Image (cartoon, rainbow, N blue to C red; front, top):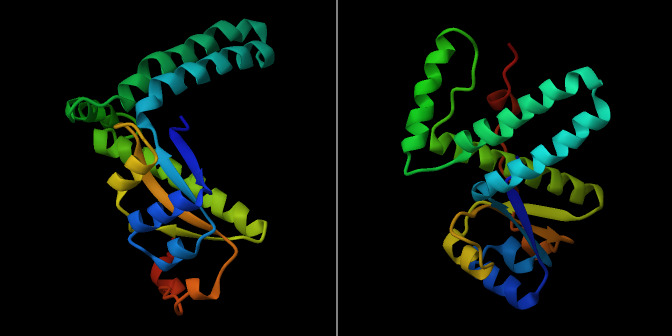
Length: 198
């Protein structure tokens, strides 16, 4: 559903304000640029409409004529009914109702994380994967990045003029590393503590 947006910050005055919102962390104060990764679950209907329009054309261009009608109908069912049902929020009530559909899981495998908080986690996970891909691409180009876990999301939303439905997923500082930006060695759990082979 691609329910995310990226805000690339290069303006020095805004970088200073963001550094304060990021609790003055060294990597924030030494960063030449920052990228704020924002989730936009509130845009699920708009994105579903755009994806459906694309899929209609995609099916017409690439599917055998005898299968097109069924495939288009399946996509319409997905993006006009199921997606709005899964991504909509209504004070937790829709999520509770969706959880009741877990009865289907007695008979066949299904997605069980359907509460409103579950879907919110899924949207943040998707945005986090975009941030990870961005950081790997930056490293490939010879730049350093650092994802920040500590920040004042309310202040960041205000600085970026984000609407109520947007949520800050992650702030990533980026640029060429400065020695004063690294203050010591980093702890990593031993590999055997986090890896399991079954």
